[in-house]
Image (cartoon, rainbow, N blue to C red):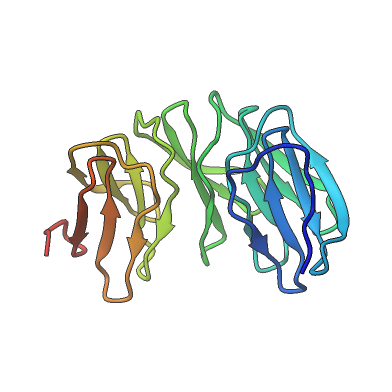
Length: 200
């Protein structure tokens, strides 16, 4: 139906807002907003490339990270609401919970939980530098790949368990409705575990 030239490559997955606006990031450090017809609405510039796919909150706020070590929140009109600085590049995509928290990992080896106003709620030292993005289960448990392990993290920032694998976990895990979680590693292994870390 249409195509738009950005002049560079993109590895982010697009996010689509309730009004049909399409958001995605590029290697030139720009977050694009397009109408459903492919017209450019606005571009927001960060300091380095964007590999973090954007997530959209219930109020339309757009959340994403950048290799410039900052995590951003933008209003639907493209204005910056706030930014949060870490000590490493942010290449994972954020998960937004119903408990008014945004979760993401940074290459500084920490896993972060921020409130919707950009304040730090807690952070958990993982040592992880893989690009796995977190997902949130129905009970609020957060699952994320940490190098060679899959971690389950409680809503208040405590590690519940960790499961080791051959190969790193780069892709986001999949939290299923029955409470189980699936993940795959770079060694071509797919695992399905229940909520207590038992492989089914």
